[in-house]
Image (cartoon, rainbow, N blue to C red; front, side, top):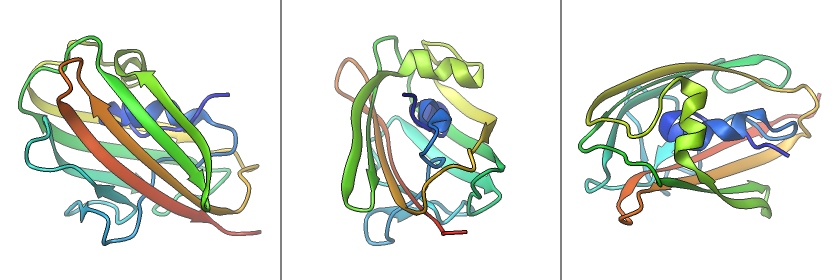
Length: 168
């Protein structure tokens, strides 16, 4: 089973984008982290100023995502240092309060889904990704917590996403 992810950082989050029953990457309650300015309100930055990635924006279209439709993800950020080979993404996906998945992925494998490869050099980072959301996604609230960690245990980024797919 594959999971749905967002991109770059979201590669971490991109690998998730292909799950047959999971949504794209979405946000949690406002008290969990900082909402990204000029971004979707569905994604929250749970990182801090020491993270390697500074996120300028994450835009989703449609916002919120709709099952059975393509989800366009646009991302812009800045890496304060190179992201090396061996970097991992730790993902927790919940359906309501039930933990569906807790897994570690090789970030450098996932980053290839947005036409990047490791090491990712310091500097500006932008990407666009279209993810097909299956119409068979069960209704309910989905939450994704993703953290990207280098082999030296430095955090690249931490994001929390949440969405609710209604009953049709």
